[in-house]
Image (cartoon, rainbow, N blue to C red):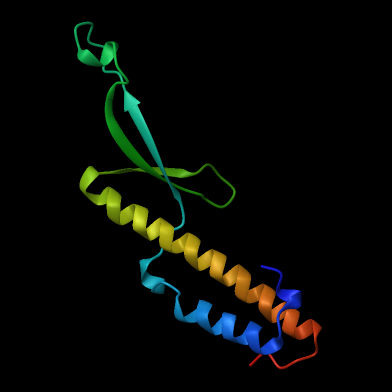
Length: 113
């Protein structure tokens, strides 16, 4: 969306719509889900000729100045974890757009509030 071509009223309306659509802040999780399959090593197991046992899912959470932390996510918790991560991305994208709108309003020397 090229916000420079929108009127100030349209920018404020878009910002308000974005703010109303934010997910609850308690329902966000920064990270990503990793899906793996593992082979058990038993010579007669079906996993030797297929993708392996799984899927096994892990949550990877970035750590400041270090390696990401990985935690196992049980299959029954996977949908909820995926939704929390989707909420984080939606929140981040909305904040980026709201910030761009506010910067454009400031550039125009208009009131932010």
